[in-house]
Length: 311
Ligand code: FAQ
Image 1 (cartoon, rainbow, N blue to C red):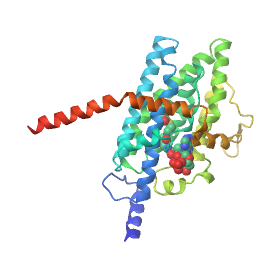
Image 2: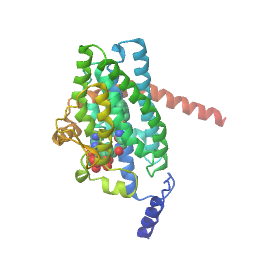
Image 3: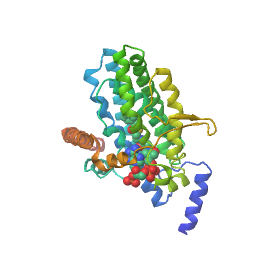
Image 4: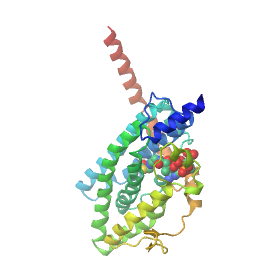
């Protein structure tokens, strides 16, 4: 009977239908969604930290307002995604506990430091650019609540990407010192941005099932290539050099060829040993403790309101 259910589920998904929270789904489908969506939510929240580092030092009021709005958007994305995880039958408190204990993953990219203002430009341009490439495909993911959250998140990410590229334009077309800052930021963020797409397809244990069930609609390597193809002309426009001597247009493939990725660095970062992993988790733990009274007060207020409604 289980086999029959599985077959029917596959047909349903193959027919481009959305799976909704109360529908029957294979346990492995539920599990991998809980894993991916909660990691995604954690990434949005931890992702606020590298940029928050520059809010108080933004070079103008206008830049400060824009950056503040962007960082607040990321908090919002985290909240939609925690809500989407809850539709799968886990409490958000549990997923957050897993983040704070170091058990759950979040995107490798947020374990790198933001050393100069140009990093804020590079993050918007490259990190949000990579996030969009990945999330546009997730707008068509088979799980309804995740797909719908992605539509709105993508709209906001496009604004973030332009915000970053505009900072890069200002710097790249500015003084030689500003241009050098932009180049330095590109040098440091390029390779980590390519790692955001995850391991190469032949080393990606979750891909087979996720593709079969249409949770993922494009493979890690496909998306990485799309991102490179889209970004190279943007770097050329800025007059900046991508730090990859092997980068070259391949007429036959219709894509850019690129040099080898240092996977050892990637695995080192996702196993907790990147340059800022400890700092990021310490910051989240501190924020969680300091916010405890707010959560308790909100819960007490909700209980009081519920009692008043009964009377
Ligand atoms: N970092 O078998 P696969 C943002 C893990 S954008 C850390 O290929 P899968 C916006 C993977 O979880 C960033 N871990 O896995 C923003 C798995 O470990 P597990 C967030 C990674 O799931 C911008 C193992 O390696 N976006 O936040 C990474 O099929 C600016 C094997 O990998 C998303 O999360 C990595 N880069 O494919 C915010 C998008 N890559 O769980 C602020 C949704 C892989 O088995 C500022 N997620 N791993 O222990 C996805 O599309 C997928 O989960 C992939 C990985 C593509 C990331």
